[in-house]
Image 1 (cartoon, helix red, strand yellow):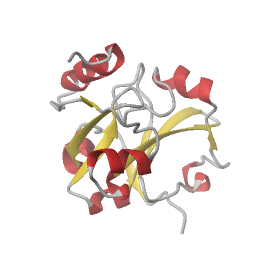
Image 2: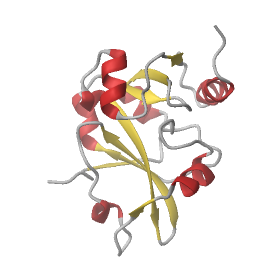
Image 3: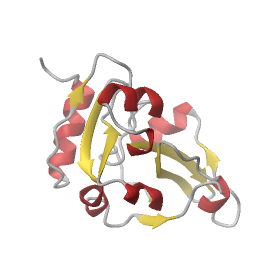
Image 4: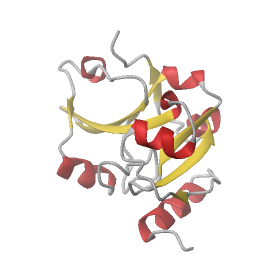
Length: 156
């Protein structure tokens, strides 16, 4: 079965970035971390939430473990970042909420990675649609994001 055109486009972008992974489409929704974990048989923490925030200098992507919540104050540049609206997410990344991948966006975006993702050797990421995912070794994902900042960005 052919991949959805958005998922296929993302898979090609990932390969161009040196991340040769297999994008899979699932019958079950992967829109939330809990749904994704159930669909792929993983722990909720292994699900990478690709969240878009807006700071004074523009949008950024925060990659957070599925069992954690981002502290927006830790993303701020003097003032707390705010969650992006759905239209801002699509404009910044080219993808709709529920399918935003950690990389391969329409344009380069500053990226902050929650350090707690390193608890897991393998993580699962959205692949462009609410039904498409890919798995990747955590360190391979981080290597594909050479300009990303890895930090503690979650709530205490």
